[in-house]
Length: 170
Image (cartoon, rainbow, N blue to C red):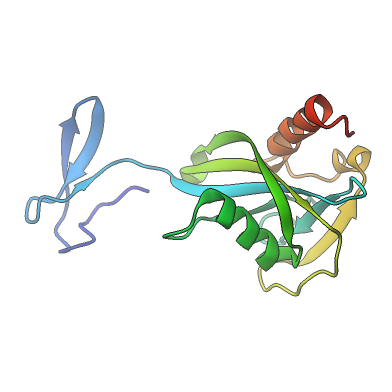
């Protein structure tokens, strides 16, 4: 996130070099602002039938589906964020999760922390953030997953590879 004004006192920030990093500093209260991406969890949800849960968010794409994702909140671990986002957006309860890979999403300055979350298939929850939810077989995902201006497709590819190498699932 790039700041122009100090979040503490409101003064316009000055550019400085701190070690190898370009930063900003408040000339009044001396608070330093790094050029740091926001952390977001990105989660491929898999059930006991080896189905993949994808969601539809019309503000992202009218015709493509995405994996679960969401911003981390203060005080939670990455694993807690995975479970919370899956529950909030889908109603599914995570029984186990596994880190797979991370991705930098430059358009929004986000660090996407990619996981697989395992669930036992249950009823979907109603969420204001989600327009539709659907279980897919692995071979069906490629045709529907978002790849433009979105990390879902890349995360699906990494998870599929991980599952093939570690679980024997496909």
